Image (cartoon, rainbow, N blue to C red):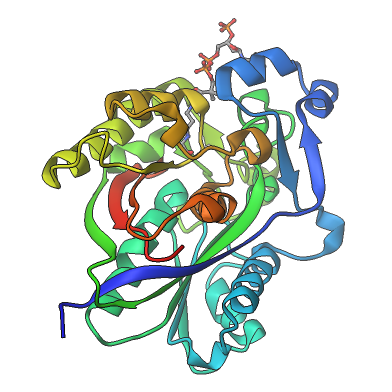
Length: 331
Ligand code: UT7
């Protein structure tokens, strides 16, 4: 028996119906379609309308159910459910525990992974390790975020960027050497000054004042975050390529976090990658935080071939960032 690796064997996705276009944002804040398009590459994003009375778990469950149906998998076989998210349903109780119960994964344990826009990337490392150790056979990793619940729709510097969505990936053992090959993951706490939501945590609990001062919304110093993101995401991807002796010809796809088309382009250029090999759906979904990577996999699943070399790269709040090299396991 060969050495066990952990491969992605199925994906699923869900985005809410409501489409928030650049034109609609023009009515809400001082902005315009041309600025948003040239500075970010975003045309529209999906929003989970608050009147639906549901949170992040709603989308996570839908994405997981799509995966289960496509794979014809009995949820009782799932050992572990991880929900990567920056916007859990509630604090304290893991959203993942609720999701696992709702999809019928009654034999699983479940917890959340919170690392801002790198949550899914870090979650890939955790899910793959649990499988490659031989301890668990089926790990369901879901990336889901309802960014619209923490976005200030009077702040034009953030409200144009974010959207809502969810994606899921199943990790299973592989004996052909496919699946996760290598990872380069990093963090730097300096980042919490540049991208944060100040109130609602233990440092600044909710009060009338925090609500009045709009401190329950996400804030970012876009220019600074942009600089860190461009250099770190590109460096991480280049490091993974060097460490594994991958040339741009060897790489079938770059799977980059969808924060800004300019950051994605810079990463692809650093890798000397043909832009046709870069997965991109930022124009339709904006930045869905933990959901960007699995939403890409779901969108491009039809084009992926067994053995394809995929390089994932992400950068997010914290700061957190990194890159993962994975060999795709099915046609
Ligand atoms: O996913 C987690 C990590 N997050 C990221 O990676 C995001 C990184 N940052 C970015 O993507 C970009 O910094 C933004 C898209 C947020 C902003 O783009 P930018 O090119 O860095 O613009 P800027 O903040 O330097 O602003 C340029 C100008 C400013 O006007 P002045 O000072 O030059 O007169 C802004 O006030 O654009 C103005 N501006 C806008 N104008 C129209 C800022 N937001 C808008 C807007 N519409 N929505």
